[in-house]
Amino acid sequence: MGVRKSNMLLKATIAIALMSGALGSNNYEMKQQNNKLNTRRARNKNSNNNPHHRHNGMTGFVADNSNNNKKNRRDLTEDIDFFTRMTQATGSIPMPRPTPFPVASVPPAPIPTNPPQVISTPNPTDPPVPVPVSTPNPTDPPVPQPTDPPVTDAPTVPLVCGITEEERATQMRELALTITDEATLNDQASPQAKALNWLLTEDTLDPPVCPDDGPCGARQRYIMASFYYASGGGTWDQCNAPQRNTAGAIALANANCDRVVTPFPVNNPRIGDKSTDAWLTGVDECLWGGLACWGTDDDRSKLFCLFRVGCVFCGVVVCVYKFVVHILCSLFT
Amino acid sequence: MDQIDFENDGLSGNLIPEVTNLDQLRFFILEQGSIGGTIPNQYGEFDRLLIFDLDFNELSGSIPDELFDMKVLQQLDLNDNNLDGALSTNIGSMTTLTFLQLDHNNLEGTIPTEVGLLKSLRKYLLVATTTI
Image (tube, rainbow over all chains, first blue to last red):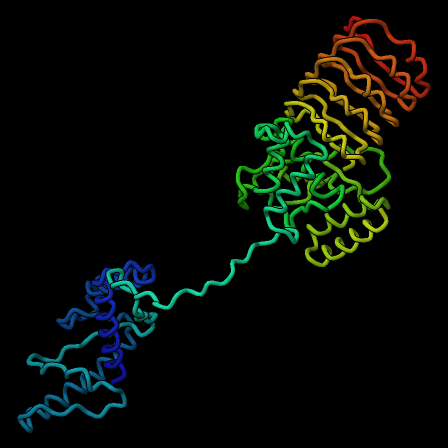
C-alpha cells in the first residue's frame, strides 16, 4: 500500500508539474524541474525497452529496482486477487481495504478484465521531484499599488571624509590648486585635471583620501596620478592601470607589473619597494610598481604615511590609529 | 615618497613640476624612456634629492640654472638627451655632487671653471659628442 501511495503522490506531482509548465513559466527553477522530469522520462522510456520490465499498459514509470519490484508486485498481486475474489463472491465492487495512508481522494483502480499485470513503480531511490510552489504568472495583472502616499523621509546625503561629495570635490580641487596653476587644472586634457577627476570619480581606495590627510595623503596621490597621466601611463611596458575596476582586470594589471624598485644602499625600511601593484589601483600609491615610500622614519609626515599604508592592510583599527596620529601631528606642526 | 624608479619601461610624455612637492623624495630615476619636453625650473626645489637620473630620453631645451640649486644632490645623469644651450656656472654650487654625466647632448659653449668647485666629484662625463 505504501507503494500505491508513492504512485499517487508522484502522479499528483507530475500533474502539477505539467500544469505549471503549461502556464509557460519562465522561472529558472521551473525549467530545471521540467528538465529533470524530461530526463527522468527519457530514462524511463529507455527502461521500457528493457525486456525485463513488463509494461502495465499505462503511461507511467517503470521501476528499475528489482528487489522493490518484487515486493511491489507481490503487494499488488494480493490486492488484485482480493479484488477478484470479492467480485466473484458478491457480484459487487469491494470497498478498498483499510489503509493507513490518505488515499481516499484517488479513485480506485479500474477492474482488471485481463490477467493481472504488474504495475511498475518508480524507483524509490530516485530523488523526489519537488513540487513547484506557486510562482507569479507573468501574465497576471500587476499587483495594485498602495494608495497611501509614500513616506517622504529627508534624503540622506552620503558623506565622504565626513563631508559631502561636493564639499570633498571642492576641497580636493583647492588642494590641487596649491601645487598646480589654475589654467592647467581647468584644461580637462591636462594630466593634472585627469588626475583630479580620477581621484574624485574613479579611485577605489578604501578609505578614500581626504583633503586634510596631510602631505602623504590626497596630495601625494594626486601628484602620482598626475605623473602617471603625464608620462604616458596606459602605454607603459608594464604596471599600467587596469582597464576596468573589476577584480579580474585588476588581477590582470597586477600580473603585468613587475617593477620592483631598484635597491639602493638605504638603511631605513621602505614601503612598497618590493610591491608590484598596477598604478591607479585601490591600494596605497606607495605600493604601485616603481615607487617606494619612507617607512618607519620618525618624521611626523612619514609616520603618518606608515599608518595610512597600514590602513590598507589592517582595516578600521589601524585607521583609528591613523586618525589619532594625524591629530597629534597637527598639534605639533 | 622616497623613490620613483623606472628604467626602460616605455615612459613618455613630459615632466611635471608637481613632483617637487614630494618633499621627501630622494631618488628620481626615469632612465631610458621617451620623455620629452624641458626640465621644469622648479626641479631645483628638491631639497632632499640624492639622484636625478633621466638619461637616454628625449629631453630638450637648456638645463635650467635653477636645477643646480638642489642642495644635497649626489648624482646628476642627463646624458643622451637633446639638451642644448650652455652649461650654467651655477653648477659650482652643487658641492655634494659625486657623479655627473651630461655627455651626448647638444650643449654649447665652454665648460665653466666652476666645475672645479665640485670637490666631491669622483666621476664625470661632459663632452662626448657634445659641442662643448
